[in-house]
Length: 442
Image 1: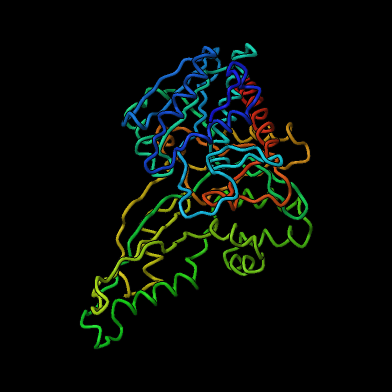
Image 2: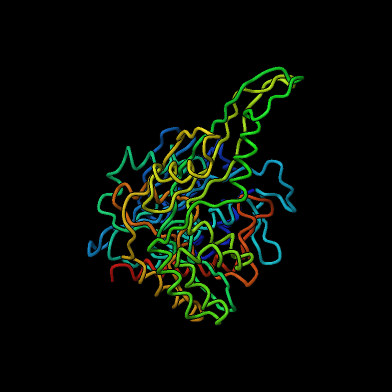
């Protein structure tokens, strides 16, 4: 049940706004984001902010709100999605769509990915309007559907069919970055300035089929076993990208010697993997930032218990570093797997544009002002966001979902059971975004 408080001052209550958003079940598929979008549209239009709805499917609309500025700076985009992933077969302590506030945390699906950001961005924009601030440039808030399933009904649709809505935009913010991480006793705020690229593939293993009573050696199943073993025990080659060079250079001087002296060795391809091996739990976080990666996710093969399959298809979730292409992936993966598998490209989502830092200094200043003890650093996301779609319009995207988080807090509940966010982080983030909107173009 939605809150019964008036929405005219909801900008002062971002936690309550988030609770309301959680109570809309926008699990994708099927999405059904229409009711959630209508709720936000009502809040924004009530405040006198111009809105536009565009949809490929009426049940999956997208909301574009625009607050007019002085025209002294290009329009500025904030983009976030309201669809969430499934909670099926997950054991939750509290109702994933209850939006309950318990012991200082808001619980529910989307509290971290990414209805929290929808609430922050919406509340910050409403505060700018309520305070009578005329921003330097138009502020555009795009609240979209379908990010969790590729964006075909959301950002991709808007970019391809309605690019005029974003004409002149140079910068945007979205997920994921600007929140606290702790390392070596220091507090960092990684700002996402780059992200990896989707490169989904199939590895096809073939061999002679036959009756299960007459075993076949070195068939498709054996090749599958070798492929999975290689993917489990070996990595693709090391690559040092400009964003990782910048990140390590800015982190290392602030860390204790035992960590700070080791991190620069990550930037030497001859020592990268050995340093990663000694990073302990941090290795899982850092390793994908220095390699193109492949994760086996789906196996299809065989149709009867007594028939040896002649073909097995293994789906591979490949992720490319910025600047790399499927040709690079096929060359590296082919060298690893040899003749055991035929590789087929299923989907490639390129991220156009070069590594730039045009908005980085402003985002860093906003975070330093919000938390003087924090250290902003540039970061690369191992996953992908809707930013890749907006990049096709020449828009530089930054992951900026500012949150002051307690030491020990992890994002392990994203897409998992018991997803939750500290209520105080919502207040921190909303104020930081508000300050960003005030300072943009000033």
